[in-house]
Each structure stands twice: as structure tokens, then as C-alpha cells.
Image (tube, rainbow, N blue to C red):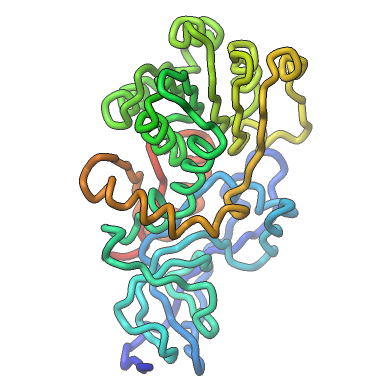
Length: 343
């Protein structure tokens, strides 16, 4: 156990949920607040945030919440996965300088009572930020969807929406390692180039400039065997039309619907019956016990350069609300992180 002589500055900074959005959120949903420095009590750990993760699921938690996670409290800090450095510890499990990750406040510094929910980041993961991206729960999400639920075989066609996003860039590489042919849809020509050059996709298209059915007919001429759905809506409907018999559809997210006030539904669901499609919604929290095994399997691939992962970095905690809103609108390339301070 150790106790720091670290000298705090006079104030901390944190970002609160000021109001719940109706439809698309905007800057008025957030409040940037200067506050007193947190006080490290017995058995507590003070963490300086370094990287803060921005993910689509945060939009749901700005509402009343979801079945697997409660909504954020009004007037309280936003919370997400954070990689930080221990700057004061009164807990024998953590030492000053340790890199850790946990679900922490959007704040420069946070005191974690008794160190509960903090996980040390070992050198085997490479750069510490990977603990909340490629080698953290986002990576596990991609693995579970693309491999465990998708079950791709050599020669299968795997179609992945939001292919340049956090899940998509990893899921495509996992499916390629399984011997599948991988096709992705993205929202810009730059993202088409990105997934083709850096993520090993065999083909990709910009859904904003191409007709969905024409693109899938051309790029998936043998039909779709696995569709990993990140967006829902008309993309899911098109995948149903082009699916093969006994296709597998892991449903990871439906970002196109997160800001809808009314649910317009999904057309073509009768194809689930005629094509005997297996459609499985999944939440990574149901699989979190697999994270150590996933890290043990995947970390060598990244350390050896066999897999790549792009982090879209925005600097400064004050930029977190704008960065989150932009990510929800599709302006991120790869995994969006806010870098709060220097490493």
C-alpha cells in the first residue's frame, strides 16, 4: 500500500448530463463544470484520466436507460470506459503509475472507492488505450459477433455494416482470418479506402452514394452468409433480401434508430422464415467473462502486426460532448477516443 505526495491543482473538471435528449442530442444536453478536487479516502484510488471511450451505446443511456444498463442521472457526470493512471493510492492492490481501466466519470480525475471496478493494464496488451478498444469490450463484441455467432466458414460471404467503425474494422479482420470473403458498407469514400487498405476487406461501398440493392448484388453475387448488423433500418432490410438460406445475422447495434422518436419497424421479416435465417441480438455484457481469453488470443495478433486498429483521437475533455455527437453522426474513422492528458 502506498500514499502519494501528489499535489493537486485547485479544481477538477467534469461533464454532466444536463438534460435528456428528444431525438438527436445536442450540446445543450451537457454541462462542463469546474468542481473541487476529489479526496482520496482510506482504501481509495485516485485516477487521472488519459483516454475516454466514446461509443454508440452512450446515446441510449442518455435516455431512461436500457434493459442491461440504467440511464445516466441528470445533473451527474457522464460515465464511460476510461483508461487512466493511478496518481494516488491508499489501496494495496494499486500503485502510483499503474495504468488501469474502468467505468469512470467524464472528469479529469476520479476517486474510485476501494478501487472497485478498476482493472490493471499489463504490458502484454501493448499500448494502454487498447484496453478500452481493440483488446477491450469493443474487440470482444466484434469477436463474439463475427466468430462465435456468425460462425463463418472458408468461402462464406460476410457483410458488415458500419465497417470502418470500432466493431466493423475488427470484425472484418476476424472474418478474414476465418477464411471468409468480407464486404462492408460505410458512409464516405475515405472510409471505403480505409477498410480496403487497412482492414483487409475484399470489397466495400459508400451507402450514401450507391443504391443498397445494386451494391449488394454486385459485391455479394453469391449472396450473404453472415451479416453483422451495426445500424439496423434499411440496411438490415437489404441484407434480408440478399441473404442465403440458413444465413446468420448477429445484431450488435442499430445506430440508425437510436435517435428516432418513433420506431418505424423493419420490413421483410417474412424472409426470416422462408430463408431460415438465424437472427441473434447480443450484448457484450453477457460475454464479459470471456474477455481474458479473448485478450490472450488476440493480443499477439496486434503485437505482431497481423491485425491493425485505428483510433480516432480528439484532444481535451471539454471536446467530449462534441466528439460524441459527431461520432453518432458518423464522422469518426475507427474508434473514437478523447485524450484527456498526455501519456
